[in-house]
Length: 288
Image 1 (cartoon, rainbow, N blue to C red):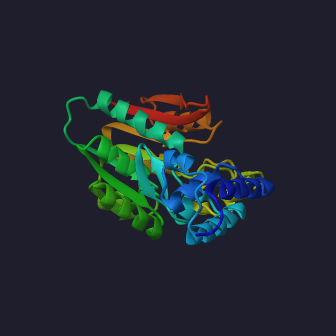
Image 2 (image 1 turned 90 degrees about the vertical axis):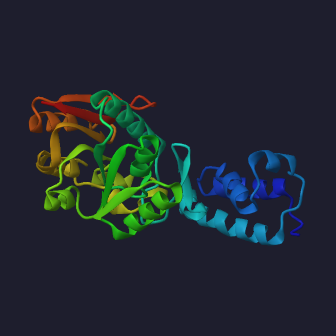
Image 3 (image 1 turned 45 degrees about the vertical axis):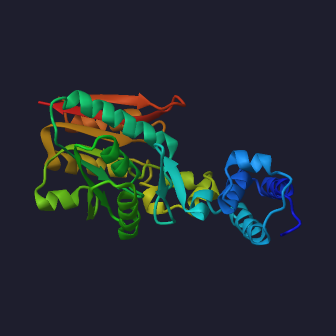
């Protein structure tokens, strides 16, 4: 044993993280992971001594997080839509607001294709596979393709799909290029692309800018570079009746809506606000 009790370890972590301007609760998450205890068990065993090996590991990972490494990369996973997804430095950590993109997509697919038992959907920039895997598991009749420019990201997504039992076709390539090359047409394109203006790096947390993949975060001076490229490629892959769903950065709603309306003048385009009241999604329904 280590002669260090659980409550002492947590107190140490809390003050160490506070000194380094990190969230204090991170200590509890890390200790639960490395000790294998649930929150309830931990609360009941506060006065128990920690295993010596766990105490050593715990100190090391608290220091890594204090230095800026995201907890999710240390633990190796993050929860999304009630499922656990493996993550590493090759993929963006799934965010809660992206769950709202998934939920909004499912609602609109039901409304747009009520009678269809086979809907072809592509998730562009799949990263960890959080969007594509969740959509497939929530709506098994979907035929899902996932695309990413990073081969490392595809490996992570493939692993998550396999572990969670989602049958998905993975394609390596840039935006919709793999589908264009195949001459493939789909019913829905969903994407959470990079949308952060490059200049925002200056004020963003180093946990994000120094650890998460930049190619998944930043998109030119105004953050809209990828949406502009989508406007050139979407008409080549969408069927006449189709759904487009984008996650966007706060404040980009009107600009992305205009891009979609200029490209698809007959589409029904709507900006959707997230749980925090920020414009976070734009959906376009094509039904000509």
